[in-house]
Each structure stands twice: as structure tokens, then as C-alpha cells.
Image (cartoon, rainbow, N blue to C red; front, side):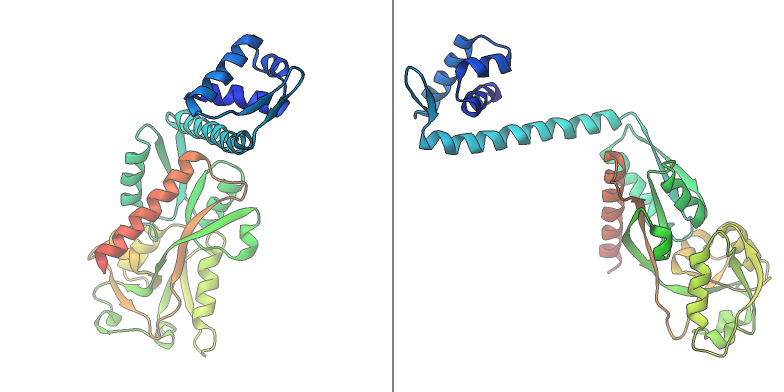
Length: 302
């Protein structure tokens, strides 16, 4: 049995007329009749009750019609899915990312993605939160890996959580805090605090505000930096301490010491954002790769 048999049968069944079905299919009437009879012979039961002036489905024919329509629909969907992948197989995928929070997830994600779509080139863009939000909104980025922004920033966008990052205090190895087992907000308030810029990373400053809320301690912001790399350099030089995610250790190694906060605050939520209208096929595969990489990392570390 071939799909052609099903298409001919469905055309005849829906029109209840061989002549109309033949016109619709752009083939001769005898060819349609022959294909339908061949199908009935192969099935071993009658699909139609025929008379000189009419053609009607049998009970078995009605059931077979429903199933045939579903098969043809599924075949069409399979073709479209294959065409989408083929069309994307030579393209580029533009992904925004925040380097420090994604340091653990990004390398295995890229490896998994290249196994799925080896002919798609991934272009990574190291951007601030605001730049990533704008890039996705404007269609310049198909996706961004980002710390969860506030609700107002997500208008028209979908956010999906991928991982969580425990927060800690980063300092130079010779800093007095480096000998402590944990650091409190009150202790932090006594030191110059190095932060990311409020304009480019508003969610970071919202997090700082929540961290010090309910205490008498107020942070003494000494410097603001527009990138994680310059912030790390400032902390390493002894200009102050910073509140960063545990994933920072992947970027700094032994250059900085990371000490937990006490009490442990809510972790940063890391995830992917894209336009609510949906993902392109390569972007969907990239998301699957990120989810797979994070799941493997969680299994390996447990």
C-alpha cells in the first residue's frame, strides 16, 4: 500500500464522486477507479457501496477514511519538519549569553548541539541583560541565555528556567574574608562592593536590594562595571568584593576566593528567552541541547 492509494481513496470518499476526485487529483477517471479497486483488493474488504448513479462509503470505509486522513496529515507534517531542518542545516544561529552564569552549561550545550545540527554555525554574543532583551525583541538573536529578568522586561518574550546558581561573595585570595566559612550582609556592608552597572544589569541590582532588605546593613557600592571580566579584574586587584554566582569559579579558577553567604539567599535563576511566537527549528534544538547538558551535569555531580 502506498500513500498514493490513500490520497486517491480520500479524494473519492470526500467528494463521493470519481469524476470530481479525478479533476482534483489531475489524473484520469479510470486511473482513480483502478487505484481504489486495487486498494480494496489489497485490504480484503469493500470501501464503497456502488450503484449506477451513486457512491457511498461502507461502515468499514468510514473508519478507514478517518485513519487514512490521519496518516496523510502525519505524512505532511513529517515532510514539513524535514524541510524545516534541511532549510536550517546551512544557516546561522545567533545566541546571546551572560558569560559567568553560563560558564558551566555553555560548552556541553555547544557540543550537544553540534552533534544534532553539525552544519549550523552558532554565533555567540557576549551581551548585557538589556542588550540581550533588545536583541531577542528585534529578532537579531534567536535566543538568549540569561538571568531571569523582571516580569515587565519579559513582555512579548517567553522565559524557560534551565538552572539555578547559588550566590556567594567573591574576593581576592588574601582578603580578610577569605578565611571565613561564610559572610553575612552586615559584614558585606563594611567592605567596598564591586557591582555590575545598574543600567545594563537591572536584575542584578534588584537582587542586591532583596539581599539587604530587612537588615540595617546597606551596601557601599564602590565601582560599577559593564562586564563580568572587568568586575573580576577589579575584585582580583583588591578594589573590593563582589556578590556573584558559584558558577564564577569556572571563569576565575584560583584567582579569586568564593565564600558562601549566610543566611543562604535565593539562588539566581538562569534560563533561556525567546519570542513568544515560537522557536525556529535550530533554536529548539539548541534549547534541547542545553537541557540535556544541564541534566547530565546534575547527574554527574550527584
